[in-house]
Image 1: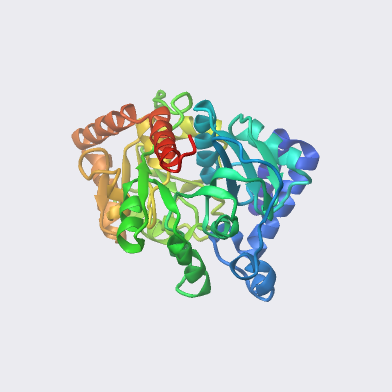
Image 2: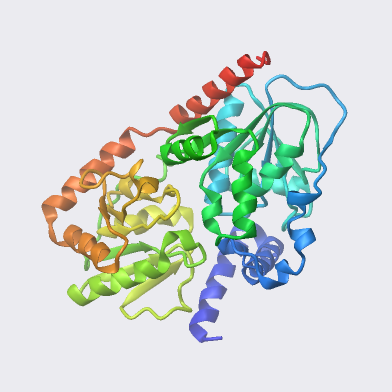
Length: 416
């Protein structure tokens, strides 16, 4: 292992010690190493896991979910979530929505489908409250038995099987943040994920692209909420003097973020504008050949992101399934966004208004980045469009969309 790689891992581990204490950091690091070995970071399943088919995919075939004794609590929700660790953006969205529903009088319970790195449920609850959102919700490890509820909520394709097998819910809901079959090649896992859209759930979706796709292709009843961002964290900051900088959301562990395409595009930018600096963030990229000067920022702490974004003149963020929250966060910091075309992107990003959208080709994306860097008028126009978009967004309003939908559905079932 190279000295550079050792230094990178040392700094990442030191950061975890500061966040979680030594024991927590050791456990966290061990489970993340296991994730990498098993391919879990990229949504893939390693050969080692494939040899344990019956254990890995037990929820698809022989899952039984028992009903705990007790009466159904009015406005109660059993949320089934995948295991999680600090920094999971998808889980942050889930917990944020739970907090807004709690404020509207819903009783939230959290069932973590896999134990993961947690010793007990209290540790999982502590991580949620300290590193995500403060909740009143009771937390349970495992979802093989649950009390009756008004609404059981699936939050990923694997948790949908638990929700489907649970017989003591008045209503079943799917909180869909992405089209998860696209995480896999066409095969068993694609089929396992896709089948969950045929289970008869209603869906609350992150954005209109998912709502339209699930309704059109699977006949699901859908209600979309839009994106917002943490307005206390993301806002414009002064740009320090220095060379022009291009930010790239570089997550090679997440195939849908187009890491390889992005690197090819940045190389074209460097050939045309050799004085430009590049910042790669989202995951450690030190194992890859990067033929231009760059900062490998890796996984950046949330509190450090606004300053990083503010020091960049344009950002390349690629999405081949649903968008992440990153474009809004960059816009809020005054950093214009370049992305790929597609309905999965264009439900929020508008070419020539709040972003520059390009064909999914290296030279086309490089053209978009160079246009922003060299055309000051265009750059200011895109920044202004981004500010207008972020100013119109609000998590409380989006939470109200979901709460109103749930209340309508509960009323329809006579459970208000």
